[in-house]
Image (cartoon, rainbow, N blue to C red; front, top):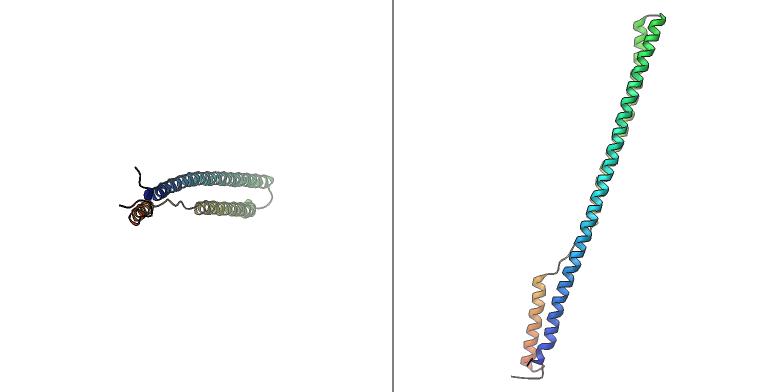
Length: 171
């Protein structure tokens, strides 16, 4: 038959095991939630990078289109001026070439500024990813050693109760 002095501490020991298992289950659930949040943050970061890359490609294509259009217009103006027979062809080419170079520099500067802005957006997207990672709650697992000490304490309490006669029977 079971000694009454062991019933209370045994229930405590079972409770400690249950608490340990429940804490492990909470930690597993938190790890799964963290993994999902991290995957979502990664997906958002990649989506941001893809959008930034698309915008960079658009800027580069627009710069190339504007440059080609400007060069085509300069060639047309040079040809018209040379064919019209007005003045020195070299002076005409220098004047139109100088204007074209100024416009070309403006196009390149505007494109470079847009690329810089997009690079800053890329840095901001990475910073946001890092903030998302840092916002993940830490997972705390219960200590198996700590649970073992609690169970050992309950066992010691049982033997103490038994030896002191608190359990109703004495040896």
